[in-house]
Image 1 (cartoon, rainbow, N blue to C red):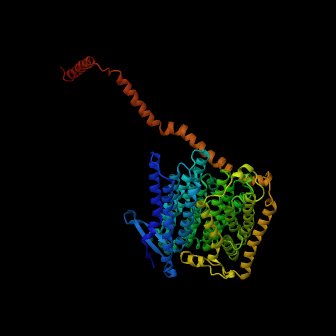
Image 2: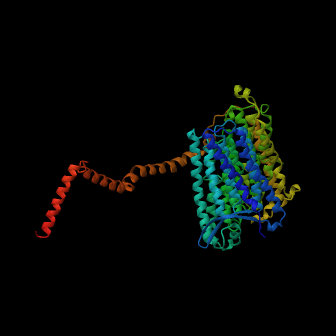
Image 3: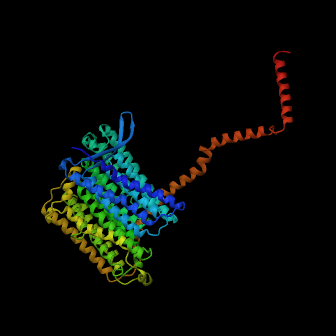
Length: 638
């Protein structure tokens, strides 16, 4: 049964309209009309907040329907029509999209409010909020689209906005390079996504291009074509969600303002790939090989991100590699067909990772934009709200029970173990311990011990309420969100998994009580070991270490960026320069230039006889008439 809800179209429309209005206001400011930051802030925040309220309304409308009939749609307008083919700009609200809507709009709204304080005094305050609104609107189109084509509009929209926001401080060339890197790497992934959609439509698209039609006809897809489609779609996910080998753009995205880091890394762009795989669960569930590829690439990315995060000094880059690692967990979950577990980790991650990034922004602002953790220390008493909220986020990220990250991470590890994927489970437990280590390395170095820069420390102070209030709200989510999917072993009923069931084609492993206890015990042991090592090394104060051997290799991120530069970027640049200097001027433009040269020479030749005097032209006429008379007389035999 499918209903209709016209308010669906307003959810992405409100922030998009806000982006347009803010952009026009910024243009007016550039022309000399002064507009208060308060007006910018009001216009910038009202769209996301109203979208959140509409999302809550959609949630209750959906909840009122029977479980298997929770599908509400709205066809906004006809996008294009070619012959018998008609594609509409349609929006679909089902349990999966509504869950995404709720936390994307909530976390997005909190980041907008936080940005009021963080970006205060910025000369392009209005432009920044315009980009944020555009980013959020694009993400909402991606989530709400009723088919891959509409999803792709939002998919490309968030890619464009990531470029605009990462390179926001464009006066620094490094920021522009980081934005370009994100844009180019995502285009590589998007090429795979487009190919995957093309093969999918070729195989089963004759009956319709929306998700419901594709799901109903998924059995028509030949096995070989099914594997091809799933792997190509996953290529798109590796770009957008920073998985091996296309993860290299995400740490460089730290070049943007800290609220941008929180928006990109927590609830929006980087989770799009996980959402896409879960949305196509009806394909991945019947192509087990593709699911295993997704799971193994995900867990290896989780391991790689954790290794890098253990040795970074920049507070934002530690959290960036943590995001890469946690995204790997999510893909491991959806790869072993535990789609609800993967999406639940997306949900909890949005709270604690946004909290940690915004907390890092509070620290950075207090220390006059220093980001090296080894220039910090002893900030616990100077920034009490930031410290306690970040501690909650750190415990959730590290997987400490009963914080939210423990329940969502444990659900993924349990699903892998119960499904017979012992290797994935073992690596996942190892990564959990590493996560606890580098997370509390950050907490201990930044907030405990003695100040490493006394002058900066003395001037540090807590952030304004407009920044600390979102931290408190996110801390509540990081603490309690896990209870929404409490497993039976803890007396819960896994409400999130049951809510998502109508949207997902899930395979539920039949694990024993002993398997579940082993999974929980492994997670808790990893957390305890990781935090214990971090406590012994850093809690009492520590100086910046000098890395050698493997640690130096890991600090430089295995020199993957340098490898890509040598193997891919430089040869491509060399070819581009050869085309610019040889092919274009002498091959492509050669005939054009030759034709232009001939016309120019002909013009110069005729220019000799074009002197501009009437008497000369009269002589030319006499000579011409004489020649014509001579020719006529000869031809007529006069």
